[in-house]
Image 1 (tube, rainbow, N blue to C red):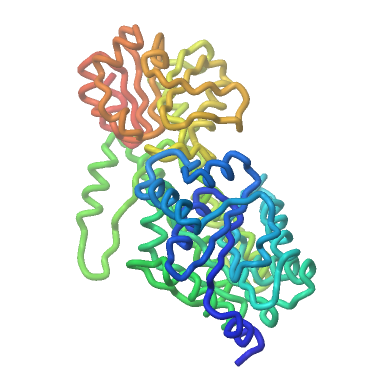
Image 2: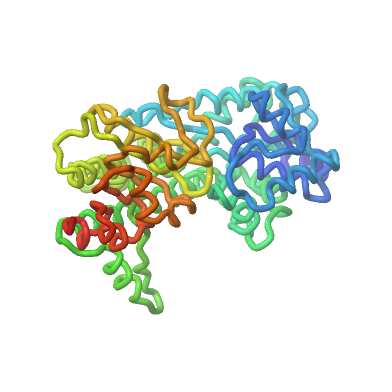
Length: 471
């Protein structure tokens, strides 16, 4: 038995856990750990007074539909099993601490992530680290980060040695907003330590919260590559759908009929199912994880990579295709309005969050469309009943009243598939616009083009080459 394994055994079962970062990952993960009968206490750590006070009152600071989360927060707080703090001193009391902070890229072109918040969190843990503790990075990170950067910071700030005095692992989350608790319980959990003892201790930490899922042990770098790859592949699949949608528009046919045909080919070993095209890809994960994977291979194996000379990465190309879709929405808007510039045009944007029926507006493609249209001089109103505040972009005002948003609009731009937009009729929307022949640009395939065309609307939709030139 290694020294670290002996320290874990001497410490006993994991009774207290800490979570740094109370966001879409940290909050549900902390609540599930607090609900484990064997856990005595779970601490959450965050810099936001609002989140700290809200959570300690037993309330959910996250907006949007998250089945079961409100009740679970109230339950574990009422039972005294969860507490949120702004100071890190009690980290020294826990058996395991998980770090779930964001790791964006300021500029993907230079492949340098903004690890400032992550480094700060790791450093704070290191200052309070004790022998026999386990540190787990849940944030999506560049392959090699756990065994290199995190290890160095923790060892320097604690004076202890990773793999001997404390455990270190990576256990990436696999969640989607709107299904946070379900995903954490039911998805398999990849768990990778820098050594066998760290891996097994991490398995011990995560196994109790899994209902259908199971833990998949591996090493830390393999876990990092697993997470970045699964998001990269999903982004690639979306890009394939987006590119085919553009092809179908050019050929004057319906992408969705083609997709149905492709998806019909089923059988053993056959996987032809396609994802959906759309106005753009948003969120914190898919927009950056490709670059983490690219940076990882440049850090860990640039001299060993055998790849077609002079060819760019298909993963990065996929990113560029998905980033292009808001610009394509601008092209469809101009085409519908028969203009070369949107100067003076009144546009009503429906949806600001990147995902339907949530308040999550991180890296929303709606912002990309807004900026492009604004640059051309368009007059823009935005509607979203889910997103309440958006401080990232100065001047953005989000309306809650659909009639106010559509008043006088030359074009209505559907950017998010919120449920309420699916039930808007062309008749009532046309009355709201006060326009005889308004245009509707459907970026999420949620409206019936024939109904709008029959009611005098000008219609354009992603992938709808069969309808885009009928008005």
